[in-house]
Image (cartoon, rainbow, N blue to C red; front, side, top):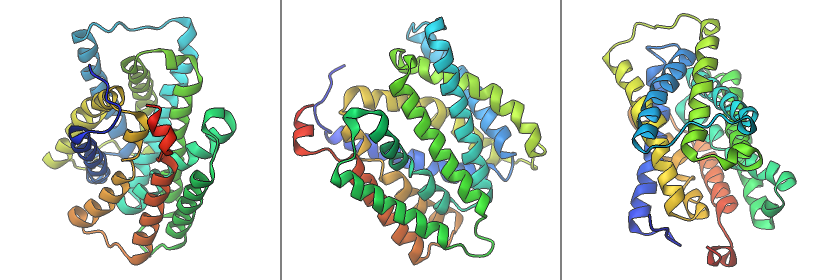
Length: 299
């Protein structure tokens, strides 16, 4: 496969489409939670996506590799993935799509802050520090404005915890031996370990079913097929074809589209504090992910 040194027109369309899929995913989880208990649905999602992934690996002749060198970091990767989605699914059961999305997509800010200390090549520059500060102000604004019945403190905290779990996954993939494995094997660790973790944890979160209807099963199918299997595999394709910095620069679209879809599909109220916070987080994401001119030329 030819690797591009820039994002071409096909890449732009692909990345906008992928950001839309992820944004709509927040709405789908919110809807699905009205028919299934959140942690149970997350576990079934991982279980179903695992079978799709195994079929893909068999088709591509990608072997499973459980070498001792990778076991500890692989299990850690899966545990962080499970933690992330316990928190995210539970958060969307207790807060709005708009709030959860803004808080969840602070992950790059968390990653940038930690990477400054553990990844020498990713020190905070003045521009990245400004982006981090803007995003933090946006988060503070979201947390300080809460209408009665709109959200809970625990829902907001869970969304931030999900972002921390996501950042932990990114660091694990960068700093541990599992980084040497193929992306499909990394995803296998995440889906297999999280399936066990989530389904074992589900009984502690209440009844599994909440009178599910066809729309809830459709939401679950979307989670399994579109997001957790095909979506992640498509992400691997984008990362292999285009510069990582260019792909990352589109991350600001997901929270923007999530807020829009929450308003359009679910009728969520979006006041000026949410809009201001969203703009601050989106600008922060762009500043953190944007490469310098010299950095872009190196690709």
